[in-house]
Length: 160
Image (cartoon, rainbow, N blue to C red; front, side, top):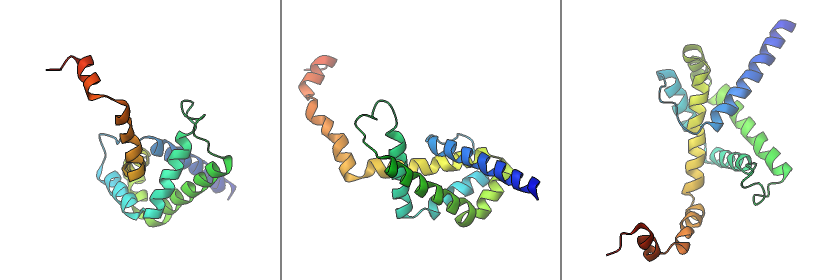
């Protein structure tokens, strides 16, 4: 029995690393197989609106650690831990329950890259959700108040 327990612990550690790498990879892999595609589809279909919000929170709390924004993105340790717990629970739920068959087939037939590729689809879903929010879109559009069309035309030398 101890050998099986050690094997399961190693497998769990490897899966954790793959999941984190997959979620942090926002660009989809150019090549994916039918099982990876099925897993990606299942993950997206099985993700509820509430799950999407958990994804957005987790992604934002992780991005807030970047040195360029850490000073202005004041995320408490408890908020970051809560986002991590929610995300971990979601990943376990998706892989071991909602998309169990697709996960097994993808891993068996296409290897660990299948997880990374499939979870990048979740990362893209979170980013799309984040940036399509009307408040976020308005915040991004507010840069227009600092750009003068006339000044831009003059600098680009495209005036009449």
